Image (cartoon, rainbow over all chains, first blue to last red; front, side):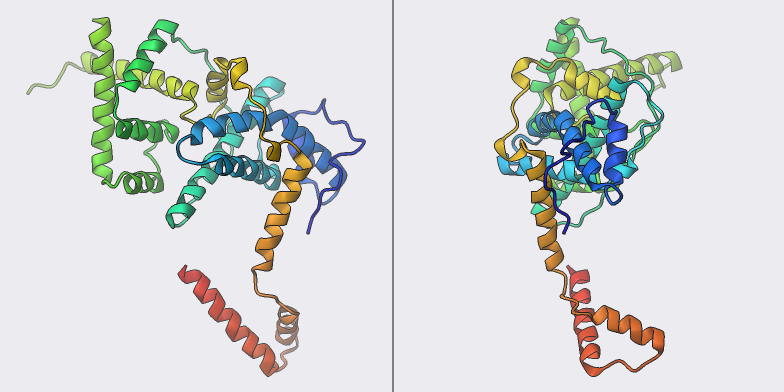
Length: 218
Length: 122
């Protein structure tokens, strides 16, 4: 069994990009000590971010230990599959950091689904967590704080069921693509309803949001 | 009911797209969606306050411990696989040399096959 003694003793990788760290990790068979140093640096950069996101996302679904498992498993899968990360030639370190975190997000989401499936005794159907094509520079949000508050109020006016359906739909949304079949199946199972009914719940929720906003803005 | 003029339909659709985008961003900020794109990461972290920058729980603070713990767990999973006891090597050698398989190895094969079938059923 592989074992870690002292992560990266004597190797300073703080100047390396996330992509470089992942490359070092993927080469652990050739140079274990550098791989461990890369892991330690990668962990230092992203563990807190991942924990923050996973904690908020899994609130009310996983307990504290479950959230910690989700974070740990996500980081470990990143370590295992470090060689699959595609930096898409991005040189800007901040952008590369965002791309790395987006990748971690896709891994975490897959593991989260596995955890729910294990809990419910259902089969695992992994979704694609490979890197998509590079995105254009992210645009800044156009939401004013007043508009954001209004949107928040509108969301709060929805039933819990409607919120869950919209969360799931948006979580897996990809332009021009339908929601993945296994996700629809999971959602329908957990809400004890049919996929047709899910579509209706989604439409109704969006209509309610629109009406709520219209009623307050004229 | 008559169909809406195309430009009105298109305007309504755009309005809806914009609303969905805004709801999506609100979900990101609430943490209800795990950011999966660069833009998501930016939007989700844009409104982060010092309060959000919480400490890791003790069991996640040390990268060495996290890695070792995960590898140990994986080691336990590996132990759950049937103990090979050199059977695979014997089988491979028998197949290579075209020799008869010893009865104890054949028994082992049958047991392994049964175990594998049982796993498939799960």
